[in-house]
Length: 335
Ligand code: ADP
Ligand code: MG
Image 1 (cartoon, protein in one colour):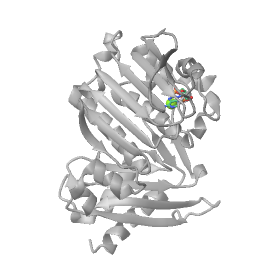
Image 2 (cartoon, rainbow, N blue to C red):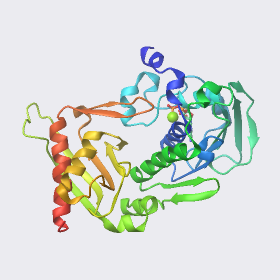
Image 3 (cartoon, rainbow, N blue to C red):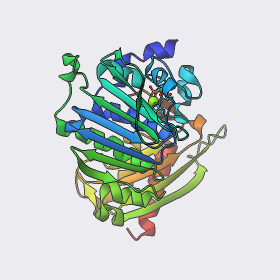
């Protein structure tokens, strides 16, 4: 299969943050209400993701870590539908097991007990009974421990942790109905409450001052741009953006999602920044958690495992909609 060949194993897992991303996506796919991420030393020494989702029966554990094994709709031939189901089909756990010590411990809700399976740098153990709560816990240790050439490319623990924090923060913001928490070296970094409100998730992730400065953006679907030939579709923009005086030096707090997927797309970020006009201090950027929704056929989502890029049929129209939506929101608040 061409698509599968395109995905060289090493492409999926580049650093601790990519491990975290895959494990969190799996937890969300499993319908978890709670996802708890705990990492040690920037994730270099260990990553653990615990969820209370659907779990797996013991006999499914070997399948979960097998190459190209997915239980998800569409299978490996259906990467394009990755917009609906997160994750890279059947690659993540297998790849992590090949380059680290991976333990998957799981218990479906109806089962009395759980089971676990460890894969140690490609060496698969046997399924053993394990006491565990309902859901799944995945632990990853000794990442790249036997591939020093790749370990060498990791940054400092602080750098690697920043990347993990960005990933887990984005998923917390994108899923306000899921309680997402992050712990580093036993210290809680943040914990959202899963009450379904974006503002609560922002409070957890960015803190009170930022949350209180946020204004609502809510622009319903309208024709995208003036070239509406062929029913190009509509764009809706919603979420929260910060007061022009509540800013940071970097753009990384300007989080944008397209059709629910986190996208670090510079055009969208630029559109948000532009909407503030001259109100931002030089080299300062607002906070944002902004959801842009377009019809599925009006966007090309490239779900490369390490980055997500989007290309809109009508890029100018989408950028214009985001700009107007943020501008309107600021004006509504006298800003
Ligand atoms: P994919 O997510 O693309 O299917 P993965 O390698 O990430 O591939 O996971 C393989 C399989 O393991 C999944 O299809 C799913 O059946 C199972 N799995 C992984 N993580 C979890 C989890 N947290 N809860 C339930 N099942 C899981
Ligand atoms: Mg997955």
